[in-house]
Image (cartoon, rainbow, N blue to C red; front, side):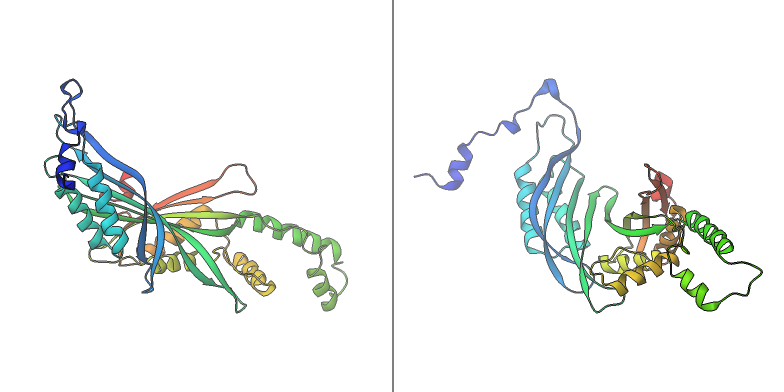
Length: 315
């Protein structure tokens, strides 16, 4: 009876067979969509498990070699991500093992990790709360230029158009002038009743669901703080979408929209200012999309930190 080791040696491996007529170095070779659990601390000290999709790659520097050892990448992904908490040091170490396992074939490695993270959010006024799902993407690379890591997520919020609000106010003024004779004294009770009627509020500004897609590079030595980044962005915008909503919460949300009128350019600058003030973030790139209720197309703006050689210079 052969041992497992001896049996493995007898199995054919056509991947090592060179094909001179197809020789050439390759930028990246690996696997995408690897299903694996991850353990992630979003910044509140609680390690949560999530189901992730992972891409694992190395370059192929040897033109005379037909392929890489994909099973080695898979097993290393499983070994690290299934058992260890996600952080920058762990990911850098994992990429180092990618290169060590392909030291005769590759000098660059990269990984992408994508999963959803649930965070409980309180209601605006009532004592209720509910869950919000935030997508998380981690892209990291290791090579001759060192280690780089990017964290991506997105914030969904409401945006009320300032121009539409101004036009609505004008129509309300005109309706008021029509309904109340300037030669007669104003009756406080009548005006108050008029303001609470559909006849008084003849126009309302348009608002739309909007999305801010964030990509950040962490400062050296900083750990993941997804919740801190989300809080900073949502507070800057003022109108993140809600979970549990009673009437008092809906009214508070309407008030927040009225106090946070914004074009996509305004929203971009709000986020830019908020992230620029965060010392944990070395660089960032933001894409804002206001999914217009007035137009069939979207209003879009981009913003970055503006550091030399950063996201802004590549846009």
